[in-house]
Image 1 (cartoon, rainbow, N blue to C red):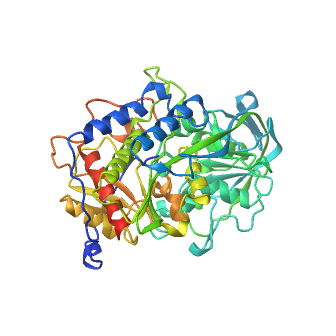
Image 2 (image 1 turned 120 degrees about the vertical axis):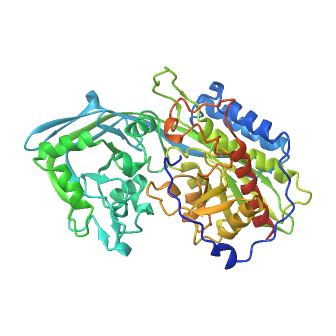
Length: 523
């Protein structure tokens, strides 16, 4: 996953003055064949033959076997005992409303069309989900955050009901609330589901807004139309999961509010201000979804470069292997979501970094884990499982350095760090960038929640430091700007490898992360 826009502020120059730069260990220069290797890995992993790398499909075996083979060829040990694979159970669910619609009744009747007004799914292992006469409740942002003095669930009982919750958090609309534009985890759609479940709701629909979500409706549809993934519990068969999860488009929410005889715009504006009180819409309707599900294993992949005198400690490098598979065709009638930038570029960058580690004149003191998690696109499930069952204990893991959609990128004078300013990793990135003649900028606009949207965040939740690194906005050669803005390819079939990609910045960024890894593994 990747964010669509970036706003920058000047780097915290004191990151170098307040903390001495870590000593730089020997590093390999950029080698002549680095770009050829990088291109080769990207082109292979994003080829049509890999079918968009959807977990739990025939294309998973091809992908993970290829990655394990590359790790073995680099001379890395298996990451999980005698295996490069960490299997775990997932459920893949396709849940469609009966008749492709939900009918509701209040003062008036209304019909929510699937997938134009709503896109829905579940994590339950059941042939049908039925919630008779389900009542809809508007719960503002769906946030319970005592530390911010905010509780959208105060004074309202949502047990057995369907919660409508706005995406993002109040700080997106008011700099004085929460952390302003620096979105908290409370703004993530995954949090909305988690909190609704804790509150006893039967389901939760997140009210989509393209600006606040940072992506258009097609991303919601493409990501959830088929085969929605979740971790699977053999004992409960996920019976305690929300009966219905989903996104509701503004058009759908407007239908609900009109059926209730209420003003959607007024409710949304009120929900942005402190003191808002959630309320039942006075609208009910039967939830009936036909469910197809499949319970299978998927696999994380990892190799290890064993350290020397501190081998029981580790630095994790990660890059998710999965993408969206085969789905709705675009205007060119292409239906394979190849995921070249997202995230074949990240996998290729990490393989290149792994190669550089194996060629160091001296092994690092600490072990290096090269982790390819499964199921990032569906909710960071692979890294969640890894962090619960790590190859090295979380309290012995120094950092997670995540490779996420790092190409194509032109060479820039600056590098963006999101989640910095307070991280112990700051000085390592500042020093590594300075060695390249580049500047670090810390991004104060996490309004799209990107910091929470890739695998590193599961490590952060376990207390392991991680930041997000992105390419900058100031090209070294202004005549060669990036010609592939993310909005044009994000989660679309046109995210394909091209020979005319400019990878000069991608290579520099791989070497920067490699340098940080070398320093951390030897400190």
